[in-house]
Length: 362
Image 1 (cartoon, rainbow, N blue to C red):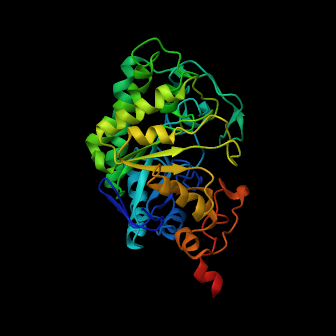
Image 2: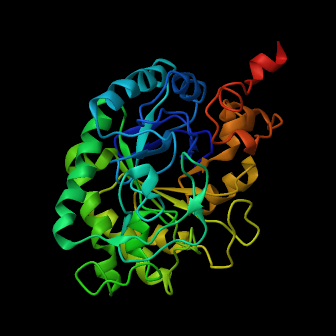
Image 3: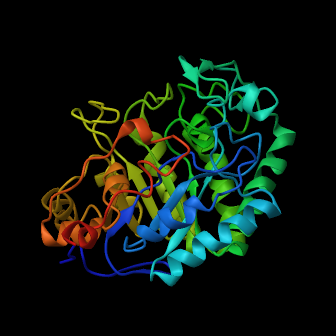
């Protein structure tokens, strides 16, 4: 039976433990989406994770509306990521890049044009911008003749990720962003080959996964889904009918790992009463299945490994304040609390100043 601290082979990725670092938007790049030197130390500190999944990283200016988030669509970004991946590798770690297109969850003041999505919809609430929060805008539906260009953007970002030294990539298809906006019928109102039936709504995810796998290798590619409950205004009337076939399609491509963000009714960063789909997805996906959301103890994580529903657990906010999280969990050491005020700020505070156990004991 797998132990949380035992090795895991996920495709071509050999991870020394099953305590993975979930993607965490932190906002420490510059306004051109170029990683900064501060990010080198942040990721190096967390290299003991079984696998680091990077913060969400834009595949294009169109798809990246979060202020000070990094990108992977040009040479300057690639060059700035190289010392980050080198630092992780020098510390004995592994890191994959999460590829992000935000779809309608952006503002025109950041991307320089109207947001795009599956359909002409808008998210309720306000978007983060360089000028503070502003109301979300109605998105423009992507036209059929734009799909090849979108797939090319994913392929370019994948090539750039490999050139930057990442060990692989993860496709961000969760949390109400572009691919999720195609997957779920609450946001997808199309009547063409990308809308209507679950098979059609899965099409974009499948095509992106095929292109990414063709560049990086399926054994170095992963996907993130959020199958249960609403996320940033995106929901589905029958998630089982969409996400189980989606997992099967990814399995057919040979994707190495699938990460599921599954909040529960008592979630601390999103909550829902919609049942978790991980048991059904487990039956459809034979690759490494990684579960995420509100894991704060070895016991809870180990229970899902013991049940067979998960092969690894990804920890998010817990990794912010505990850079040496695997050691803390293994030793039963107290976990430090993170400071939400500094999640998206641009400085070192709340980013690289959380001490490791050794430093605390000194």
